[in-house]
Image (cartoon, rainbow, N blue to C red; front, side):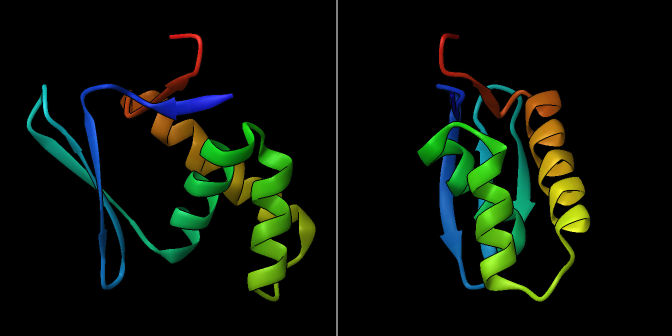
Length: 87
C-alpha cells in the first residue's frame, strides 16, 4: 500500500495533477496517464490495478502499460512524494 507523503499536497488541474512538496518547495506535474497510475496505486495499493486502469483507458499493449506504471511509481517513490503506507 502507498500514500502521499505528509508534506505533499495534490491539486487537480485542467491537464492532470500537480504534487507540491511543501518541505522542499518543489512541485511535480502528472499528465492524465500519470494521474491514473497515482490514483490507482493510492486506492488499491498495487500496480496491478494501475495497469488495468491504463489498459481500460488507452489502447496500449500490456507490457507497455506495465512498464509505464512501474516507471511512474518508481519516480514518485524516488522523489519522496509517495511513500509506503507504513511510513
